[in-house]
Each structure stands twice: as C-alpha cells, then as structure tokens.
Length: 91
Image (cartoon, rainbow, N blue to C red; front, top):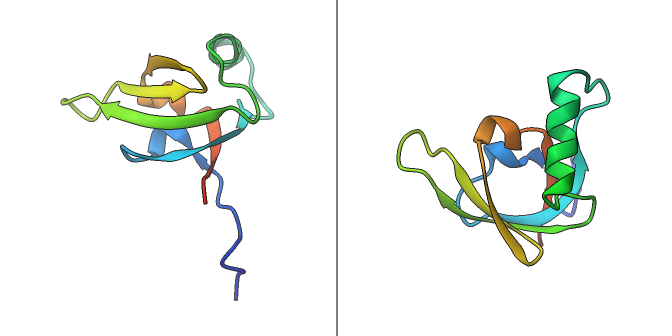
C-alpha cells in the first residue's frame, strides 16, 4: 500500500483551477527542437524548480488558456504547453 504522504507529480496542464503546488521540473529528458525552445521560454517566464504555482483561471472554451501565478507573477499559458511543467501539489 502506498504511503499517503507520497507526492504525486503531475503536468501543470492537467491540473484543475485552484491547484497549488511547486515546480518539480520543466521539460522532458528528451526535449529537442520545438520542445527545447518552449522549455527555454517557460523557464524565462519563471517556471523554475521550486517556484510556487497556483492555477488561477481557465479559459471558457476548452478550459484553455490557463492563468497561472508563478511566485509573484501571473502569466497565461496554453494547456498543451503547460504539460511540460511538472508540479508537486501542496500539502
């Protein structure tokens, strides 16, 4: 039986409105080409390991884009791009 304190890392793009957590990693081990460029842009926006994140808002059509608070900054990101951001939930 798994320990109830086990942290379950998930892609931010799959999180629901109200989610709070911390960035565990950005990108995948095999990020190349367009994924590597997107990974770089996400890091420049503040999605760095350990940054606090909160999903504030979802778009009306397809729940896309999402508004995310990253530490003290709020940014809008497409859900498909946010799937490169792996996060650990708070608590």
